[in-house]
Image (cartoon, rainbow, N blue to C red; front, top):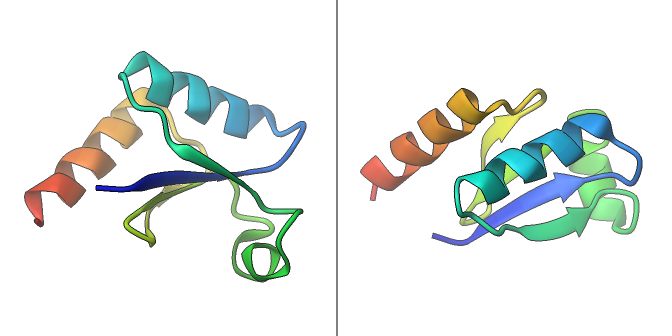
Length: 78
């Protein structure tokens, strides 16, 4: 499963989501919503957004329990 986290510089929710993922041993690819017009169009006010294999699995406030649930559900669907 390929994980990516859509973020924005200075976004405290993005920083919290990344820290929670790293604490779980997950290092997602980081995508800057402001550096890509398509990402901005899709996710501008929704960051952070966690993508698994290109599909949104979680967005907004991504606390550890939300992330665990999203990843567990995604891995169970494969």
